Length: 260
Image 1 (cartoon, one colour):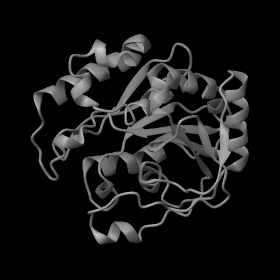
Image 2 (spheres, one colour):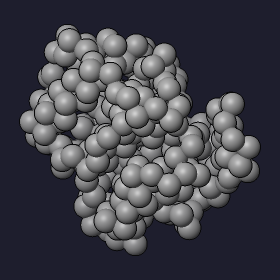
Image 3 (tube, rainbow, N blue to C red):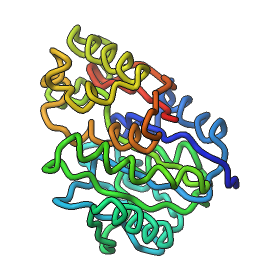
Image 4 (tube, rainbow, N blue to C red):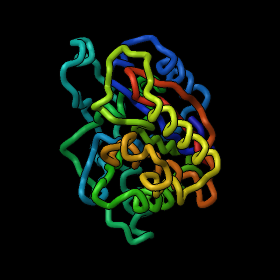
């Protein structure tokens, strides 16, 4: 493991089936862990844990949550028994408190599939401690950029900030197995990549106005908010680098970015 500085990372986690199928997405995620190196711990910000105010997971042995239905039975047998990171959770609380952002440490839940599926592919030995931070859709995009900025010091202490959501996420357009991508989805994906590379935080926060396709790409904010946390965690002047692009199951973008 390394004490070095990590870029903050945003990945699109797509459908849970990426855990059991061979694709360009699984190949990318399997290689991502090797390319990043092994962190001291991971702070995962997943779209699938929504709270009113920030909350961080403080359990010692987080369970694997199968928070999905209607998928192949083998998915429900998968477990990701990584140790928890309660010390990191307390550090998150302290960093947010420095910015006057209250954050609660909570138990009673484990790692949802937005966290454990990417991590299972990136660090399959499940030996890197991990905790999870919620998203708060009611607080809006700008608050999540500030949340990320508060967490930026973690990157200098061997912590990987891994944000997991969806670059384009409109489940009304989810078409399992389809390779046809709608024009609006491609346009938003291209707009997003350009804004990320430019480090245009203002446009990324105001994406529903800045992009004509923002409302269609994200009927709700929850899968977009982790991207803003990753941008903020990259630092005040962070610009993004494209790590992966592509679509699966119709209009689900699988774009991934690094911020530093």
